[in-house]
Amino acid sequence: MPELPDVEIFRQVMERHALNRLVRTVDVRAPEMLDGISKRSFEFALQGRTFVAARRWGKNLLLDTDQGGTLRAHFGMSGAIEVRGTGDKDGTYDRVVFGFADGGRLCYTSTRKLGTIGFVGRAEEAIVRLGLGPDALGISRKEFSDLVSSSAASIKGLLMDQERIAGIGNIYSDEILFQARIHPATRAADLDQAVRDDLWRTMRQVLQTAIRKQAVPQRMPLSYLLPHRDTGAGCPRCGGEVKTTAVAGRNAHFCPRCQPAPT
DNA sequence: ACCTATGTTATCGC
DNA sequence: GGCGATAACATAGG
Image: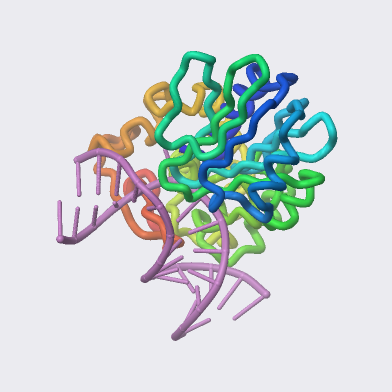
C-alpha cells in the first residue's frame, strides 16, 4: 500500500482525526519496529502529548507534538495508520497503539513488520538520517531534470531511489512511466530535456490523481495501469499484452508496444 | 510446497 | 562511487 499517495491519505486522515487529542497511553506491542529509541523512551516521549500537525516526506508520516519533537512512521510494504473508536476492537496487526484521553485510539499497523516508527527532536533529523531526497511533489522541474540527466541508473531505478527523490515505489514508478510512455529500463541520462520535462509533469499528475482518488486502485482512471495490474487485463491504451521484467531489483509492469525498449 | 508481494538495507561483483 | 542483482527481514495469499 504505502507509497507517497497512500501516505498522503494517512496524513489527511491524521489531520482530520488525530490532531489536538490528548494521548493518554502508548502501547508498543512490537518494539522491534522502533527506530533508534527504546520502548520506554518512546512511551515517555509521547504520553501526555497532543499532535499539532501532520506532515509527510516521501513515504514517511511526520506528526509534530505540542512539546516539540516529532513522531515519524514508515509503513514498509504492509503498514497503515488507523483511527479507532472506543467500541472498535484491536486489530491483529496493531503494532503501536496510542490511546486518546477521549477513548479513541490511533493504531500503527503492519502485517509484515517491515516498517519503522520513531521519535525525533526535529523532523529534519529523521530526514537527514534516512538520507531522503526531495519529496516527489516538492521537487522543481529544474531539479528533477538535473537529477535525471546526471544519473546512470535506469529511469525506474532512479524514480524509486529514495535518496534521490522520495516517495515513489514500484507501483507508482510503473504507472508514471506507463503514462509517460517510457520503457522502465531506459537509462535516465539518455532522456532528452523535452522528455524529462514531460516526465516531471506526468509524475506530478499521476501522484496528484492518485491522491484525489484516495490512493484506491479501483478509483483510478481506466487509462491507468494500476487498477488492472494483477488482473491479467491488456494494456488500457492499446489492448496489447502487459509484460513484466526485472528492473532495479523489482518487477516492472509495462506495455512493450506503448513503452518501446530503448535502442 | 513454492512463489510472489506497494520497502529498505547490507553485501557482492562489475 | 554508481549501479544492478540478491538475500534477508515477517507474513499472507495464490
